[in-house]
Image (cartoon, rainbow, N blue to C red; front, top):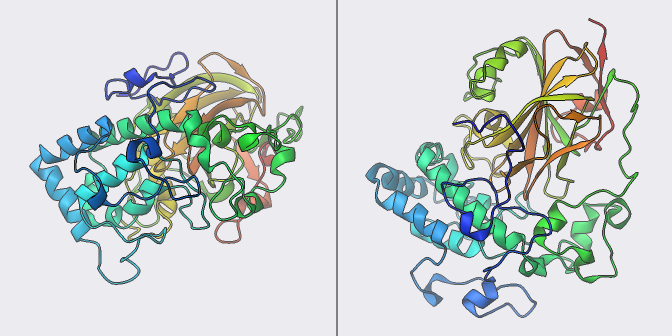
Length: 445
């Protein structure tokens, strides 16, 4: 069921409120979370460098410590159809290379019990940096192969499974918002998020972002504070701020797809992943306004800035969060060593996402939709605007918490939007385009 359209729909949650009945994410900037137990406290060991050491299953109790993971286990074990899917998804992974290891280079998990134990460890660990395509994605990495199997595709579309995964991510959010999560915010050249390899992917970090390199962890009080870091004043000025014909980039991101003539219904699960408005907008009758229109989609890497800004000046008509999937891969893609990257258009129809409808001041743009979409671990879409609120072009309207992600802008067919050449470059050579720079120009209709 879709949340109410009134008010800010993202609500911070305390530790005690993280249940399936209160599924909103548990991020709260600057709020101390109580009852957080670190991996080292939990398992009594580290690797000698301040990182929690991997816990072998032979060294630990078989009892799952995470309440949320135990709830997922109960859902699986008490539903014979789900249990069959979870057993088979690991059996259906080929045994030959490259499937003997997951895309992060670790031995591939081969049964769902071991997967649950992995989740049990993840919720009290911070993600380490690495140079793989799944840097910082400890759940997505082990699910990359099983979620692409026939059984995995069916399992991760199941509503009961997604409710429990949401609860697990909420539990993890409490740890990532605590001071104990900062141990990976260091200058280790290989694994630290402030080390040489990580900073090479975040050039001008100290000058662009609000931080203090002279303080521990650059002054960030938690992993989430680092991930949702803000730009310094003037670091991303709005291009053409007084020209309402110019639409700017809502996120720091890389172009993924530009499509026009969008249909009300289309086969988004097929290989070409055509956009289907009714499904994207979850049946909201407003889809009628966009039939025949244009969609621009771009994706964010884990090292990008993860706040969203309004691409136009105008008034918020609707703003809500649509519950959805977390690890549902497009059935036609097959095994994708980059996780869900090749399923991005598909995810715009099924994944957890936010929808912000803005009536632009410029009538030639009119009503448009900004749709931030969660991917895998990064499915916490925090809305910071409410219905009736006025926003200026370049104003912050929300944020992702943790991981990579993607987003769409949807324009009506009456909007004659012409995109800059850089925005049409997709694939391996696609550029990373800066927040608030010009994306497109609308012409008089």
